[in-house]
Length: 146
Image (cartoon, rainbow, N blue to C red; front, side):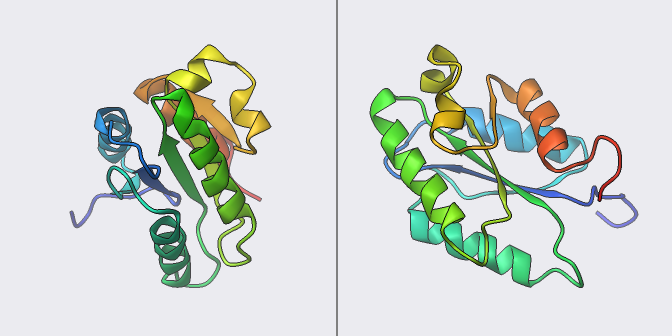
């Protein structure tokens, strides 16, 4: 509401295509919202194209230099990992949104410690509290900005 100071970075949470388990990502968004972060939750089974256009829209509506955005993608089943990798590749390959940082989470990423970096993400979180810490690092909120 009015008078509440918001942090300069925003968080967009989604469950990638085919992913129906949304409670984890909802918790991440809720926790960040409580901490004063602007969050947008795109829902379960979000198509790549919808994620890209939402990110482009958010970046385009910012005054002056766009604020940092972090995209969180949740994946609970191993067979969903290639779809998350495809989404990461789509973000990286899009000139409008490639500066968005990407955090992933879910069981496959807990089982294989290096999986998040292998698919090109910028960070990984095992739970909502860790996601809040990783968000701060990716959004450059720890010690000011550049």
